[in-house]
Length: 97
Image 1: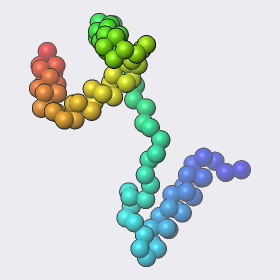
Image 2: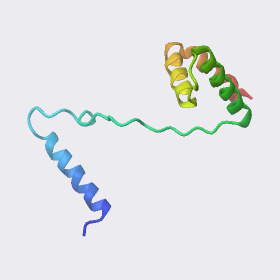
Image 3: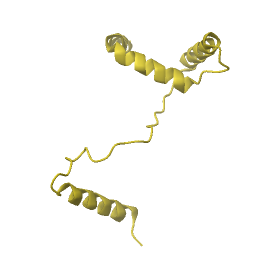
Image 4: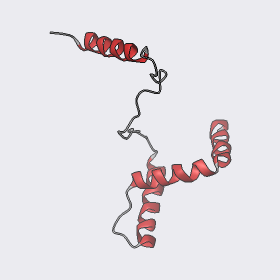
């Protein structure tokens, strides 16, 4: 019976051998992740209350029964990527405290 380590080493060796084929893509570009990545976030009780209140208000404004906190965070990330300077300033202020 092979161990997980031995199996993983065999997989890595096979992947490396495939990269030696003519026309093979460079290392690091052979796989595209298709599964979502899970992120865990700890919030203070007050910040959680604020986020929950905001999600409830958004649900009312959007005329839907509920807006999930995960959807709120995803939307915030997308908006943040459009104006990262404000986030950097907030990070600086948070670190000074």
